[in-house]
Length: 386
Image (cartoon, rainbow, N blue to C red; front, side, top):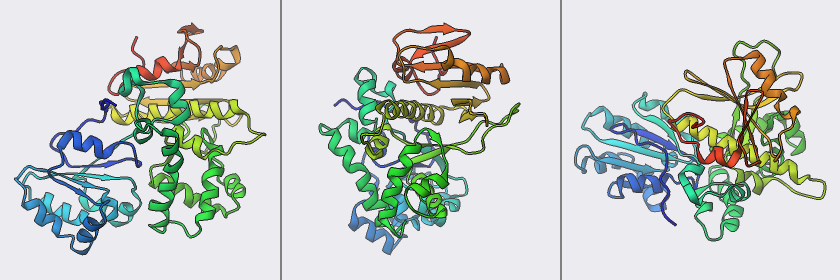
């Protein structure tokens, strides 16, 4: 398959952390940008043992390279003690630059990210965006298997997706001893899949997977640290009516959500498909905001009376309310949440994404086919190109 051009930009001349879940393409991006001449792969057991036993080897290795060399350290969270060495080298001001990749921020949070004292930027690699794939993008395929490069590029994508969460359980959770009971955590992964695209109620999730609420809260934090999931807050700026206080929960990739979501005779396919579609839009909006050069943040809006808008994008030059519907026809009631939000915030622009095939303007709200929207979504540009 032809290598997709990723939208992540290289912060030229700056050292940076590059976080991202396994399989998002961090190593491929680094190899494409910098080659393999100065790469330390901590996934290799021998190399990992060597640097854990003697972290100062990183200094010896770096000083053996020409000044100004970019040094790539893959999966730096496996040896967080190296961050002190990186900090020391950067203080020497010899022009060396570090790209520190990681698929988990948990150890780094407890063992040294602050040691770099702002000398390294933070960047995140996301699953593919539709515009990165161009003509290769298929909405139906994306909804069915997600957009992880490791899955998308595979000739046996369904098998790769099935094993993906197992890899995380084995290598990140079990080997790092992040949880005491792997069975409880496995049940939690399935239970919280029902909350994908929903307001998160930790107490309900804890009851469903038969663990204490504190344990369930800890499990959510583990998912976030492993970059497998995130919570988005409710939009509360200049609120004119009472809004909920709980965040919404999303797995980071639609395919991962589908692989974890239990299905049985009582499950309604439309509910799962609707959650998958909303999640696909979410992961694109998040990537668009984080890859872009602006200050746009992602929220949702829900009143205590139950009126909800799926996504609010808010920044110095961006204010959009976005609703997602897994339907081919727009009904009047589908637009009511956007109208209610617009009543409170007339400055915003409103967008309805749906499964139809025509752009229509209804009561000042643009209704747009979701596939067309996703393929036209490019970081650094306006949300909609018109």
